[in-house]
Image (cartoon, rainbow, N blue to C red; front, side, top):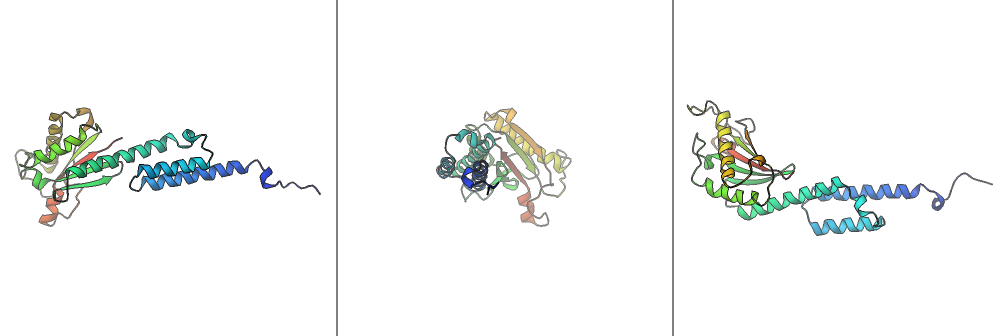
Length: 220
């Protein structure tokens, strides 16, 4: 008796389903790598194993341009962070390094970085900025300099409000980088006043943390 059901090996659709499954698995592994610490050797080994399982003949087509760009971006961010960690150690209590989305953030505590109520640098600021500039020179990526203050209104003829103070402090850092040779096309200055606190403004310690400069290096 004739039948409409074909045997699996005679069916023309199963190679397409298998290819789809292998592509999804590849995307899954790449996603795992993108949210973890990068190990290029392991990443390459996984990619090669998956591509070999899919035939290995169309490796360039399987790894999309977007996936390659994302890998390179995250790898660059890792390199920037590693370079910064060689310049700042745990003893630098007023400097914090953190990952942001597609960026590295350098947090400089303002109470130690600027003179009180002023955009004039404190004595240790030049040494810190020189170290940051040494990283940005060889890797010319966009840099946003953000100025932050606490919530206590400033009483100064030079700065009508914390908006002006935060903006002037950020601009002072940007000018320093310009003097060190960084291109002005790569710099952006942002004054945020007290709109992005990282601690309570109800305590002395919290206000000291909120007075800060944030340098965002974004290799995009």
